[in-house]
Length: 234
Length: 268
Image (cartoon, rainbow over the protein chains, first blue to last red):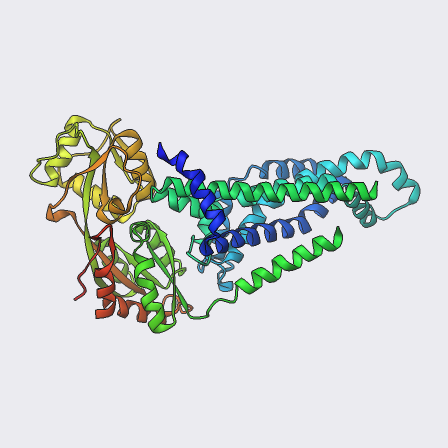
């Protein structure tokens, strides 16, 4: 097929010419996914640490549920958020459907279980080392969560990247709650779906290459920041 | 690292807040993939936006889903192609107005070597009967879209119950269905606009067109403010009137892909 050979040159010309529409789409993708990951981290990391720390009845169920929700199909998350935000739904009055904020909410739903489940595991590993010290210091639970999260920060950076990967790569949820509206809710993945459905395969694949490049750059930046911080703290 | 993170967070959040500050005057239009994929809105909406300062946000889905979005109160206006369904929608009280806007036609696409020999059929009923007889692969939308509904009516009028290995319901939009049909050398019914704008035909060719039952009427609906008071009824009515006005009709007629007119204005 001609698509594969043209796609690279399409991707290159998209990147070189910095097409204004493409820049808007890329910025919106980044805004939505980064914001979703940040919000999910604010809830997910403390939640993961709390589940690691507390022993309560039904804890096993919570752990299993968090692990299972990592596999939540994006289109199901999208459908649930759609029904919540639709005018006929319970949160309809907010008028959020078909806006970028609706896409952020859907991605938070998708990313939160990943951040909570993986951070729970990382923190639990660390807790095994710290347990005796905590007891001898007589620390409060809140203080313990803070300490554990801070000391696990390099591992959590990788968890954060896994969450970002999930958010930036999914299409089912943002398509459903965003509506792929040109200039308003069109992001990288929904553009790729649209161009594929038009049969414009070189452009679709070109956009895919741009998206991959972007994810690569972000991962490289995170890696460098991590290395730099690790060296500074020794 | 903490400061960097806080800074990033602040930038991202403020960035999103900024991008939220769109013009207040916008309507959400639920429409079909055929109009969006062909590029009609890119061509006609700017003229409307310039003359009224009302932004039109198009959510392009199948006609069935467009009705559902409107029924739930999530769109201000509809532009779809299922006249019977549209009239029912008005009768059910979901829409306050409906009008013919434009038409095009459905065409029958198939492998260029035409294994079912539909090329010189007299009418579309014969075409469908030939495909069924030959049990040649046929790709159906299968998604309750306007095109799917029209296709099912045509099978019915051809007296064929489409069933069996050869009849494949794909459950996707027009574009994805054409992509799949191209990959499996299947016959497929498409609206002419999506077909002409489609860029991945491979071995497919237009084999049959012109029967008057393949007529494909598009209608505009303004949704009922009584049922959903939050809707931007006045703005949607302006869009509806513009589509039917001389300006709107001219813009639709002037839209071409590869020198071919794809939609024919026919507002009364």
